[in-house]
Image (cartoon, rainbow, N blue to C red; front, side, top):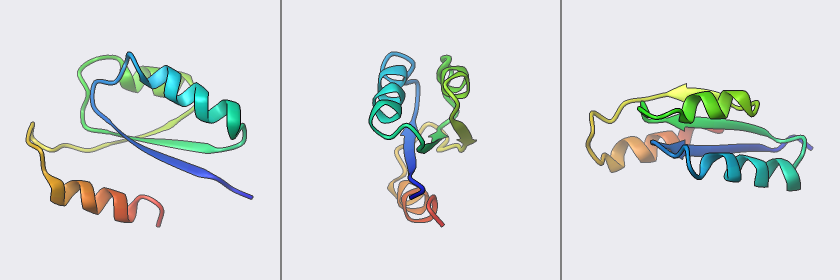
Length: 77
């Protein structure tokens, strides 16, 4: 069975390695895609180093629930 994990991310360098390792531990063959809101820390580098795909998106530094809904409803399609 193919398992895909989708995560929203913005400047999560402290937690991202732990989160990815958790999924890899319990779902070793899963594919993880990080939807990164143009982080300015090293979140993207961490995700790529740990084998994740990264999709960049921009909310223009605003909380935009409409964009979140679009991403959540379409990431798996």
